[in-house]
Length: 319
Image (cartoon, rainbow, N blue to C red; front, side):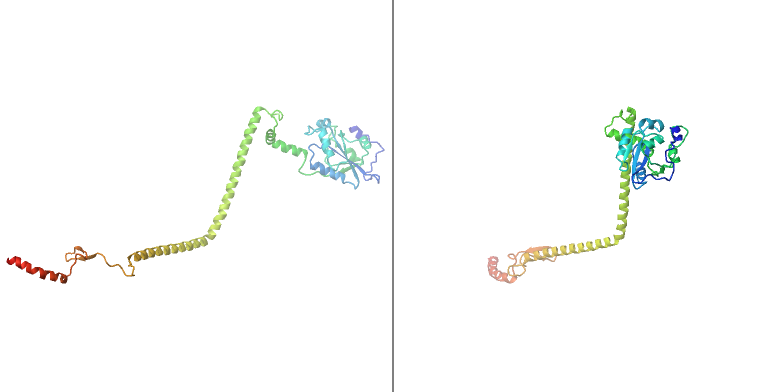
């Protein structure tokens, strides 16, 4: 392939600023591996598509044999990579089994006007470290596109490798066997234990965050309580005073009702107080004696009886 690059046919237009014939779309070619097709790939193809107002974009993709030989193992097969490109809206035509190094024969076969790619050098198949786009750059048919920073197939693979255990456990949970994932029995058990510990740590962390949130909320409520403490205490004292007043009024009313009830029981039907009844007298010795009305007689009432009984007594004496 390196020899083909050096033996350029003289019929190829080598003017770098020459434009293709008007009246037809400009045929732009972009190539690559396109493993794990991502938006960085799509943006580079978009740039190639928009190089000219009327562009027909051809995209070449190398097969597994060439790719594994010069670049390394891919995640997707060549058939999967071809199909991914066909579903990109910027691509007009996919060329399978694309060559690693572009030559004049390939350009003539597909009537390619320009080759679009980023400007980074890619080693050719000679092993001498030459750029695979050296030929098209030399003849002025190279159009530069910009790479998208932060995304590449290598970056995606690195993320998977970095979190390998987590992705393995995800697939185990989804029903894949350890043999399908190329895991030993001991490796599977160790991964499951580690994942359980990780979930436990996440739960502990979640509870700590909840406690912190509750503490912050309590702190805010405490500040509100301190600010409103005087108002709340004054309101409580006012309610307490009102309650005590009501309770005192109720007790006084109850006592008055009882006193009125006792007075009503001591009144006669004619409205006079009932003073009849037993009377209490005290003698000189201080002893308390009781006298009934029937047993008490006035001296005046006893006078005639004494006079009547006197003669009979005298008769008895003299007799």
